[in-house]
Image (cartoon, rainbow, N blue to C red):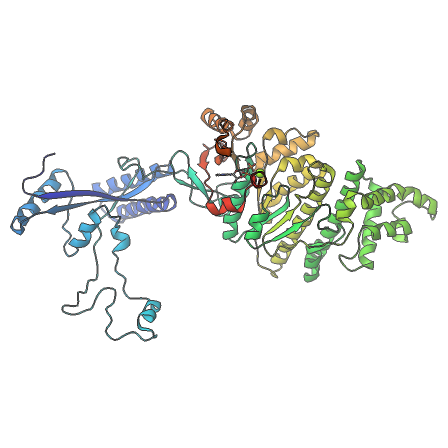
Length: 626
Ligand SMILES: Nc1ncnc2c1ncn2[C@@H]1O[C@H](COP(=O)(O)OP(=O)(O)O)[C@@H](O)[C@H]1O
Ligand SMILES: [Mg+2]
């Protein structure tokens, strides 16, 4: 270890640059292809070719199993205090290099640059010392004030000619590539990562600190990692599930995906959607209203279409309104709507369309038509020309519709729509004004919002298919899913059909719920089976802190290792007892999530919110305001 007697001062610098996981894959694959190609191109095989192919293949295998890839090189500088001693130093360093089996090459012509790169200054030769050919026009303009290049301006390479100081090229040290298995001594920055850097950056891996990017649309569409563009987030309340979804909304909006929240119960997304320049529609008692008979965006889209596409959309509009009115009547009367009643409703809706402009007719007009009993409606009841028989048949429906109009739901549904649902920007339907205890109204409003929202999406897609509008992707957020599912029967079916179709629909989805237990404890057995299906079909699961009792059902769906189970349960421990300074303590599991795709090992990630995100939204705002 003693200094060499012929070198006054010597510095050996190991320079290295980790590849990000995306380019690492490309790099090792290219190396492998190059090596194979070179070996195949020679008539007589050389031992060296075989070795380099083997090495390249080994690197590719290691990278594929999670190792990182690092470019590295070595810079050696030697300083002498007396120029006369320079030849001695050169000989000594060359000799030392040979002894340590390192090929050293002198940096003729760029010694100053190489010397500074060897100092701990953060100078990265390949990035900093490539001398560009010419200045950009813009730069020239700012220098000379005109578009004309100046006569004798030194270019970035200096002035040509004698004494001009022109330099064409500053040499960077040669770099080699190795995986973290081979050059594991380069620690701690050359880390491997099993995840692709594709998608919205969520945070850092808890194990390796490597960046983790993840969102259902990118993972399905660009990375082909999952079979279905949806995800299910689980976790105890307050651990940051909605914050993760908000991050995805923000990131995906940046990628050009339209985020839509059809029914924000808290509200968790209003602030963000406003900040993104989107619309917020408020519904609930004393707030905005939504006319259930309005054909909405789908009706307007149908006007722009022709032929089969138009017919299909109109039939869709009709069917949706019918189901919605029937569902609302059913919810309100706490009983089913019979087949004959549905036929009456259908006929009456058809008549209303003929009599009114789209969006004009409201529930009271529907009641009028039924009370009147025109021929088209009467034929749906076998009245045999007897008005009494007709009234006997429709009276229960008539009563239920009157009750619907008069009750709490009437305030929301029996008037013209205040703000129509339109998808020309991010959208959030805020239904937080509805009291949580008012489950019936909540369910009804959700049902209506989803019906309206998904109809608007299929209308947008019908227009895109016809070439009238650009094709768009949508990111639908279903937060507080357990409340939604519990709120009414029709909702499970609606989510069910949606989770089956979203691949074709260009609709990515994030579903959020507390525990699987919430979802699997629905009253109806068929609903329970469907709800389990959501979890099974979701492209990936994101688990925040969960109680131990959750592990068994979860295990059945995604296969959690013991370590993973322990990790997830440890995140559900409550915060420490502390009232110090009146500050609330953050729960230890806040922001920690395990991303699970099928049976693969999970990716534990720590989601760090930016100051802007924290400022934009704080669910505990109202508590703190005091
Ligand atoms: N990664 C995080 N870092 C710091 N605070 C967070 C983080 N995630 C969430 N929070 C805060 O925790 C609170 C609850 O978050 P929220 O996303 O509403 O939880 P959940 O939807 O799981 O109930 C919010 O005030 C939020 O700002
Ligand atoms: Mg939440």
